[in-house]
Length: 354
Image (cartoon, rainbow, N blue to C red; front, side, top):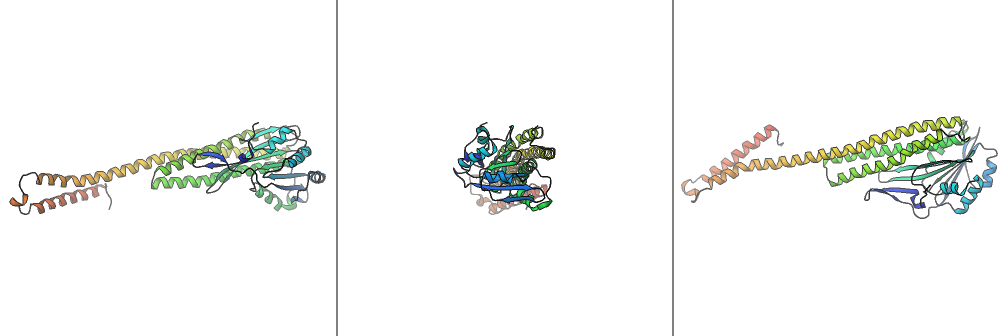
C-alpha cells in the first residue's frame, strides 16, 4: 500500500486551486498519551515511560491505549515494533500517512486508517489517523498536535468505576464513532456555509458567488471520497474472524457501519444541494438581467415620445418662435404630459415601483 510523506498527514482545502494541499511542516513536536482500563477502577490516563512498564501494566489491566502524535522518532517506533511483534510492513503502515482509508488484518493485529475532517469557519482540513489494534493494546497515530480524541477519553474517564465490560475493540469502536461524528460536524458547518452562499446569490449573483459555488461543490466531493471507503472498512471489521474482535465489539461496529451509511446518504444530499445552488445562481442572474433590461426599456419608453415631439417640432427651416411665440413651451408641456402619462401607466401595470 502506498504511503505518503509526513506533510500529507494533514491536508487543507485551497480555495484558489480547489484542491487539497499538504499543511504540516517537516517536523511537529512529538507527543504520547497513555490510557489504561481496569475493571472496577475505570478508564484512567497515566504517564508513559517505556514499553517495559507498559508490559507490566498489561499484567493487571484489561487493555491499554497509546495515542501518538507529531514527529515520533525512529528509535521510539523501533521499540514499538519489538513490543507489538510487528513486521516492517506493519510498522510502515502505522508510521506514515495514507492517501485514503485502508484496512488490513494480520494474525497478531488489525490495522486500519481513517481520514478525520477538521472544519472551522475558515479552515477545511482532513487529517490522517492510523490505528493498530492487538489483543490488549490499541495504538493510534495522528500527525498534528491537535487533540483528536480528547472528547472520547474525557467522556470515558468521567464514568469512573461505573464503566464496565470495556474491551480494546469496544474502545476502537468508540474512536471510529468519534471520527464519524466529525463528518456530521463538517456537514453542520457546511450546511451553514451553503445557506450563506445561497443568501449571497439571492442578493447579488456575481463572479465571486460563482467561485463560492464551485468551491463548495469541489470540497463536498473531496470529503465524500474520504467517507465512501469507510463503509467497506467497517464491513471488513464486522465480518472479521479475528479473535481480537468480541461479539460486543462487533455489535458496536455494526452500529458504526449503520452510522457511516447515514453519513454517506447525508453527503449525497448536501452534494445535490450544492448543485441546486447553481440553478439558484442561474435563476438569480436571469432575474438580475431581466430587471436591468426592464429598467432600460422603461427609460427608452419614457424618452421616445419627447424625442418624437422634438423631431416633429424641429422639422422646418425657419425659427419656430417667429410664427408661434409659445412653441417651445407648448412642445415642452406636451413632452412632460406624454412622459408623465406613460410613467403613471407603467406604474399602474406594475412595471416600475416608486
